[in-house]
Length: 102
Figure: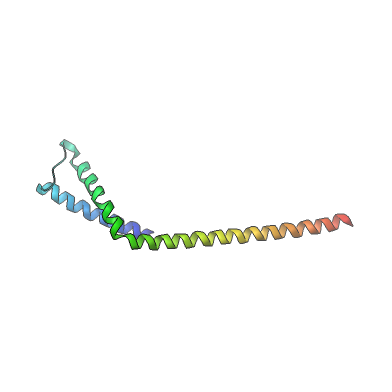
């Protein structure tokens, strides 16, 4: 997941540099007054989102598979712990019941 996040940030940084250059060279319009930085940031975000969606599809799928495997493994461990607790509880009850009968 860290790899995907770093790749996404890299795409955003690349878009930020390109948009900043385009705004200051006059290709894109400048923001009003002091809002120019916010304009460049917003435009970079809007451009990087669809690019990341397309370019990072395989990496996102890989990360998803890893997360699903990890969650399944955690569920299996939790179920194994539950069954061990149930078994120990059943043993304790049967031993306690046998002692009380005597």
